Every structure is written in C-alpha cells, then in structure tokens.
Image (tube, rainbow, N blue to C red):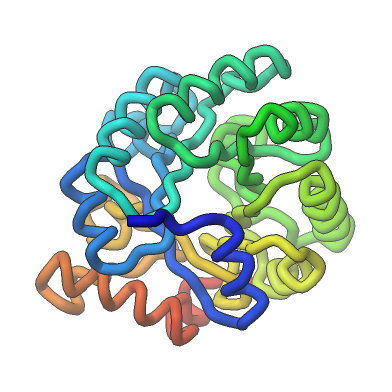
Length: 264
C-alpha cells in the first residue's frame, strides 16, 4: 500500500480539504489509526510526558524516538510517519544530519524540528541530503523553560509579525510541513494563507490545513492537566475506534477545533 506523502497533503490544502494527524508510539495504535484513515502519525517527543511521566519533553533522546518510530512504522503502512528531533539533537548541522539519519533509518519519512530562522542552514542541509523536514513554531515545548511555562505565543503584534516572517523563511529553506502550536487563531490564519505548504494546527484554531493532537489528550487519559486545545473524543463515543473516526470527521468538517479549543 502506498503511503500518504507531503505532496498529497499539499494537494489537499489546495483543494481546501482538511487532514488529520495524531501522535503514535506503538504498532497497535499505529495500525488502528491507519485503518481509521489518519493522514499523518507523529512520533512526538511528547512521549517524555505521556509515556515517561516527566514534566516536559527535554529528557527524551534520539534513541527513545528511534525505538518508537520503528514500532509505529511496523504497525502502519499508509499514514505519513514524522519523527520529532528531540531536545538538543540538532544544535549543530552535523548533529542534525547524524540524528535525522537514525530516525529515517528507523522508519520515519520526515523529521520535525522546533524553531525559527536560525534553523534555515540546517533545514537546507537536511533537504539537500534527502531528508524531508517539518517545522514547528509558536509554543515549542523544547523551549518551555525559556518561555517560562506552556504559554500562548504570538499575542503581541511584533511577536506575531516575527512568527510570520519565520514561517516564510522556513518554507523558503525547504520545510514541507509546518506545525503551529498555541497561537491566536487570527495569526494562524495569516500564516496558513501566506504559505504554499500545508500548515498543521494544535491550539491554533480551525483555520489551518490540518490538525494534530496528542493521542492521550484525544482519549482523555493524560495524567494531570488536559490542554484547552484538546477534546476528549473517547468520552463522546465510548469506543476508541469510534473516537478516532469522530476526530477525523470533525477535523474534515471544521467542527473541531471549536472556539472553546482556540485562543484569541
């Protein structure tokens, strides 16, 4: 079976069709998500919190992500598989090349990095070496200690303009997808409309081309605080497969995320 590609997601953007993404960490859930029609699976460094029980993502290693990427790749044969580059695994271009290669060899079709225009040389180098890249702006969890916590980004006009500038520069450097996390809906709309590549939102309103959730949030089983931008689809359906299908359907229709899951 042919896997979904970034080019297909770009075509969906051009047609105005919204796509769905979710985090995955093992073969069983990867297969379930595939069967439901999920477009993209992210092996997220969110595993540091939802699997390992840490307060943030910074303790996650390349070896952790590679292990779970291999598991997800073994369970999935359709969805685009994207693996997070964890904290400080791409501080230099040489580190980025070596660690991205490990994740691609584990089964990823793309790697995701967090940050703005400082990453452009690294992104260009990865793309030149045949490694597709997904960008990530807004609340970047690896920088949570710099932000002083998990806070909405881009509310000030200058900060919003700067984020738009970074998004355009990341696209020019070669990223094929861009995640926007915890930013005002209006800013997400500006960035989505400015880019040719697909934009994926999490806490960015329903104006982006696709949506992503941490699977534990979508099932209401996250330890502690459930983010405002999430929704417990399992409580609505009482069945995991039905919950996944409802998530995909509500993303496609624009019903999710609603206003209560978004930021002004």
